[in-house]
Amino acid sequence: MFVRIRLPRLHDGNRMEAIRPKKIADAIATRIEKLILEGALRPGEKLASERELAQRLDVSRPSLREAIDKLVDRGLLNATRSGTSVAEFLTPLMMPLANLYREHENAAVDYFEFRQWVEAQAARAAAERATEVDKAAILACLADMRKAHKSKNPTREAQADVNLHILVYEASHNFIVLHVMRALSELLRNHVFYNREHLYLRPGVRE
Image (tube, rainbow, N blue to C red; front, side):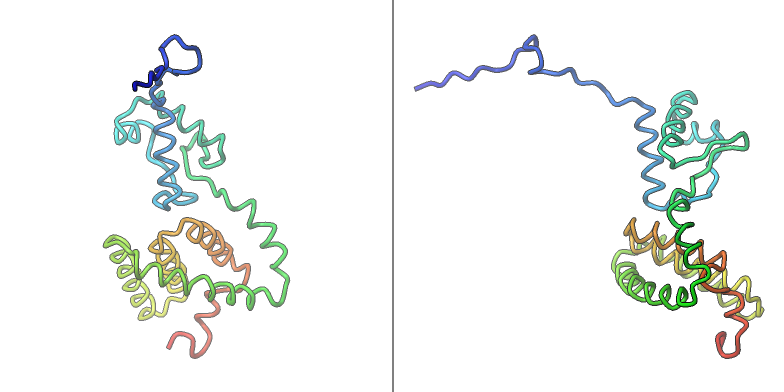
């Protein structure tokens, strides 16, 4: 017994849709967006010039410009006369929190407790997922910390300390941890919870 199966015809209205190639501008935007998501492009980082970036991606400048406009509309990039940079897209979320905690006497304690919870898991994930590039960056940062320690430069030492933690977040390859903790680290740089440089000046801290 044969069963007749009716295949859709090309002229059967909505049954068969034309295949349309993805616009090159959308493909460019997706690629840049992925670099931002993965942390390869950091908030505040300036992109290469339009001409250089178009050459690197092997695309036309009009297509690149359209892609950048799309990412600007999404709040991921900032475009000014001086160039294009990655937007500080979590700042609008974090600043009200910073203002709330700035005068709160328990803010530093709560912050450290939160970091203990997150960093334990981030360090574990980093140990399992870190690439050779991640490991090299962490080792370089540790070497910089040692140099800063020997030179007794609290500013440089505090900066290297923040950088080390961010590198561990990056090596965890968890995008949410990376972006949230990076935003919190920016608050730390701005002494919202406590002054890190002053911490390194306290007796016993640097030993």
